[in-house]
Image (tube, rainbow, N blue to C red; front, side, top):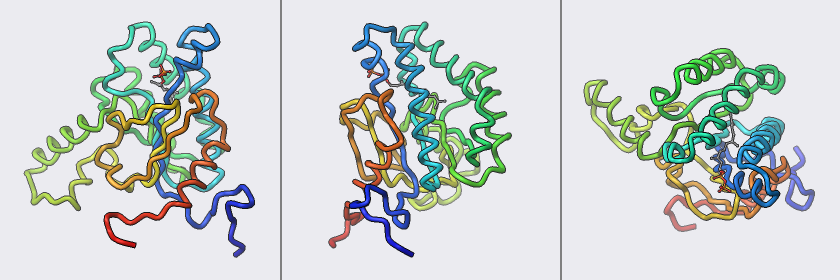
Length: 240
Ligand code: FPP
């Protein structure tokens, strides 16, 4: 098969990262720059998320995790929090056809018990309705903190009767035990932080920071991040 190279502007379909995670940052600043309310930034951020998810499915990525709301985000104003929840709810209800058309299976990471009951129920329903789709697995990371996930994992391990625990089998107690470690962690919006996102899973992730604010992201920005990833040498602590 002909190898696709960087020179063609295309990612190499043979060396895709298995699992990509995205911290979608910059919605508020995008709105402020336009003299608009932060809610508009989030609305446009959701549109950007759809463009990028569609591209991920088109490229043939297997796993994509998107950080939609952190355990720390509860400290924002009530108005902003409820708007974000409204967006998530509306999206989950309206987009079944999008997931079906693109063969996308939805899964969830985070603490469902801390969410409003109707939103938790919508998330459960969306994951059940899309469970049989076999293309991209899209992990909605919501009411999530990496440390919180690790603590909840330890509680599950305790409930399971405390079987022998190793670094290799700890993943079984995480929110999405079947998802592989992160290969590529992307953050938009200019900050260079991990912000408590998928801490266990990102031990050896390649990091990609972009100055572009999230609502400006297009599918090609994901392609560029993947091409950048494909130039890196991953050593996992070994010498090359
Ligand atoms: C960070 O920008 C963004 C968020 C806290 C919310 C991201 C959520 C979405 C894009 C909706 C996605 C929903 C689904 C279902 C995938 P910020 O507000 O921190 O921006 P700032 O740093 O410029 O203030």
